[in-house]
Length: 260
Image (cartoon, rainbow, N blue to C red; front, side, top):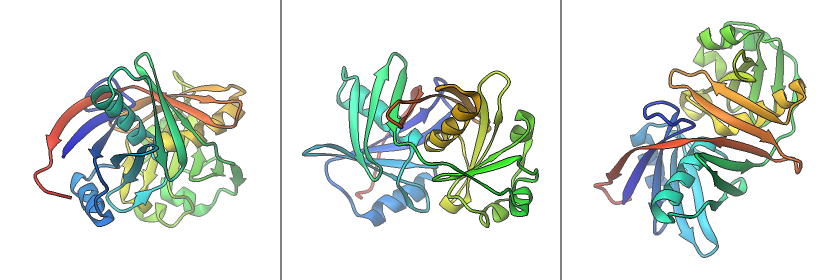
């Protein structure tokens, strides 16, 4: 079985967010998929099987299966469109979050994601202790979004992972208004056994929704300020869903020497 290593939300190898993509004829056991995800030790390993109704896609972190992942969806679409169905400009995946459609638009791969209801919650001392800086606002959707005064605060913070585990939210996102883009963010995921996600597409569904409301714009250009870094183009759609677009680049193709 081949495994593709793809860097998502970037056009340059060794930047963006790396995802492993495995395209299989049949499903292995969940235990086998979990073991391979642990072996890869990437924020996500994607598993794809072509079924009667189309492609079925699942995502695993080194610690658990997740219900939504942006960068591994982008990486999966990149692999299908370029190596399994070359020439196609659209692919649909059946996932735990429903049907996800990805369209190729020039160099970009545009994903259509469900939106989330956001509610403002009180800023707590635990948030300040975890991030080392007190947020000016906190918003909760699927994940926690903490808003800070400046881009510099977001880029320089060194969160306490043990204290992040104690606050609400599957992923804790730190975001601020950007100087050259609309917003700058970072994503920390200790509950998923990921200290920091290099570029988190699913988190930007909520981040884009927040900044769209704040800035009065439907289109948001975002930068995730991890060490690897990556750019996301986001658009709030009229049907309440969110389009997240980015580039992708192939880094490696490998043959697994073991049977799953």
